[in-house]
Amino acid sequence: MKAWSVTDDEEYLFTTIVFAETRGQAKAIAMGTDACEDVDFIHIRAVRRPMLDKYYRGNPEMNWYNDEDRTAMVRDGMHCSYEVEVDQDECERCSAHKWCSRYEEVMDGSSRWYE
Image (tube, rainbow, N blue to C red; front, side):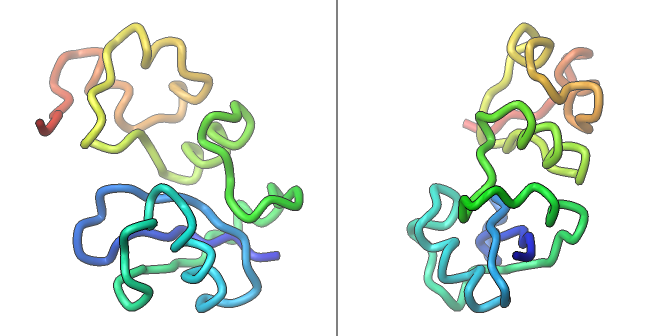
């Protein structure tokens, strides 16, 4: 199985990692995820993430709430959505904060958050 980063190609608000053999299959799986549940098939962007292939464990989607999955995704460049307010305590407790590009912003108070 191949790992794919999937997101709405118009808004880029949320991204998730799904596993599928083809881009089309990845987009179809993405339609059943929180990140793309309200997005039409033609507006889902799927990009290969070969570094994450090894994390396939039979599930169609990586789990952001699983520490191992989250750390792998953050090491591959993901971070919490800017649509989600993250406070310093929450950021400090995150299992992946050492690799997170947003961590420094949150800790020094420069993180942008949209209401």
